[in-house]
Image (cartoon, rainbow, N blue to C red):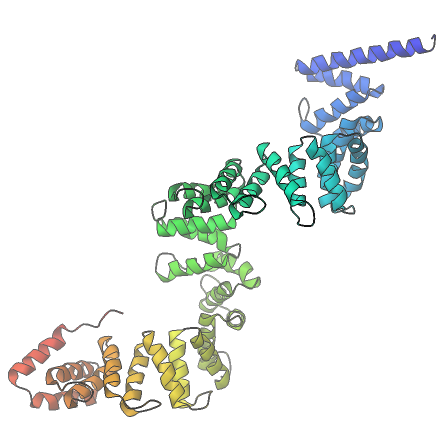
Length: 542
């Protein structure tokens, strides 16, 4: 008793000093509190050491100082203080992944004591750690234990793991629902998706939308994007484009690629907001920088329609270089144009050719056509007709109208391919139907003369008229001749004079002579009428 009494007195004194230090801390006298806690901790008081660790790790009472926090947490942890073991493990794993092994060593004894946050933290290490051997089964055990004690984060992790069909999907829904009810945004999002898809729970799009809305309200970009999509499509909620734009904006501001694309789309089309091309370009550009193919496509549509400026110089390189390197064919093609035109950068034909070939090899029709043109011109060295013809053919097969016309010409002339009048006529028709005026004329000639197709004068006149209406002088001359002779059309000297006169005005000497012959057999009134028709004639807009 004589030996125990001084020890007991000392212990009581230490406890009193600790209580005094905590009163000072609660009263905001942090300097006195830290001095007293330090003295008491050095005398072996675990709670005092833990409190010092908390002060230095949280910055509540002193500047954040992780090394000092780790020192005090370790002292308390070595005295089997469960909260300190947990805090030390979390701080070590957060500070550097190389400390995961030591973190594991401290979390394990705390978890074995039933320390719920430590069980969750230990489960996270075992499930996602990079420096320790992952063990999903053991991680699930820890998550389940903490989840059953009401830990929201553990409820979510356990639910997520149990969704695996090989585990226990039914139990997963129970855990996810508990986590969602406890405010875990990721659980709310997952539960919302399950309701929308009817997986493991009855399909209920409205309930799904409600859970997703709760997750979105907590600031998660994925949930905000999905909420915007639901409102834009009227899925589980009434269509509300204005509200959809607000959710897309929040997600886009956080860097969500799909939300950036959707926001660009709504600004470009005036859905839920006034049409704003500058904002559309801004958000499409943000998504395109992350290799969003749809954003590239829509940016190009805006540029082609004159609603967006071409990207030049360093800005273009920044926009196209990374996605082009990652294999985006549109970006490769645009990058080739930048280098070919020297648009704000030093012209580099070799770089342009490299990117054109890469895009063409992926089936990019514009790249195939431009590469064929470049090779045919001889600017890239001696042209190989077969290679040029093959590129035009590939682009034409994808619907590139100019390539279809040039493919037809190659078959007609036997350039790079075997001469084939029937194939030429077929390609002329495809290009003609796409609006290529020269091809409409050549198709008319084919039907007029029976080249690759049977002679068909009405069909010839139809295609000559298409090209003539567009202002193509050779077609105007041919159409005038048909009207003069009444071939394929009803003979009409007024129409004959009109079309021959228009062709003559473009410098066609033969048409001029033929016009004069027609004029010679027309009355003054007819001639005056024909001349007036020519005076007021305008090409038809395509």
